[in-house]
Each structure stands twice: as structure tokens, then as C-alpha cells.
Length: 195
Image (spheres, helix red, strand yellow):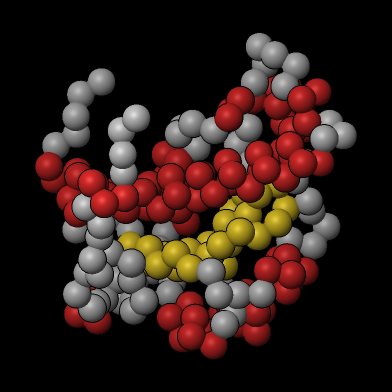
């Protein structure tokens, strides 16, 4: 494995920002698929792949999402070309026979509600983070957020599934002129230790 170059590091980390204002520029569905196809390669425990995404893109879908957003998240979400509902499937283990064929991993979860809950949430959250990095890698900006009514979003968009919403990501081409200066980040020695 070789280290990626500085330009790639800048795109994914150093120059990337959390955006709240968006340019009026469509995000092609193919680009969302490209980002997903990158994110799905990253590791999850036993390749469980619990993340599920609903891309809220049409005006009609945004109108359905709007009542479930915290007041401070309404304008930026309605302006964003896409809002991704990052969810996790509470029945992800049903896919394990083909996702992790070299062990009977499905049996690790069947009937074990605590293991299902922890694994789905932890790995779905991890995949959501991978998806943010993948969006950045394909040239998209992101504005991840909480600040919404999970039960309302689940009823509106995930009804009839075993999916549970985790967080939202506004996706598009950010208006950099509206960014605040980057907030501080802690030094390694302040928040880390090597044991």
C-alpha cells in the first residue's frame, strides 16, 4: 500500500469543509452511485454492510422531509441538491450468507437483539463516514447533520422496511463564499495517547 498524494489528501481532508450553502448545480445520479460504489469497499465487521441510503432529491420528496427537520436545518436542506438519509438495516444479517460466505455469520445475530442493534448502528455509522469521504473523492461537497426527527423520517421514507435512520448528509456543490473560518481541531497529544 502506498500513501496517496497531497492533492488527494487535500480533496478528502485538508481542504474539505462541511457546507451549509449550495450552488444551483444538479448532482447526477451516476455520481451518487459512484460514491456509494467507493464507500461499499471499505471494511465493516464480517462484511455486514448494514448501511442503507435514501437519496431525497425531488421537490416532492424534499417537501415530505421538511416537516421532520429541526428549524436550523430546513433552509440548507431544501437548498441542497440532494439529502441522503443514512440508515442501517436491522435485518442486515439476512444478507450475510452471500456477503460473508466463509462462515455461518447469520447465526451470530439471529435472535440476538443486542448484537443486531450494536452491529447495525456501529457499522452503519462507519459506512456513513466512508460515504462522506467517497463523496468528497468524486468531487462533491457534504453537510452531514443530525437535528431531525428520526421517527418521522422513518415513517415517511423507511416504512415497510427494517431500516432505521441514523443521520442526514446534504450533498452537492458547496458555496465556499458562505463558509466560516474552519473551527479548531485538537492536537494529537491533547486527545490521543499511545499505550
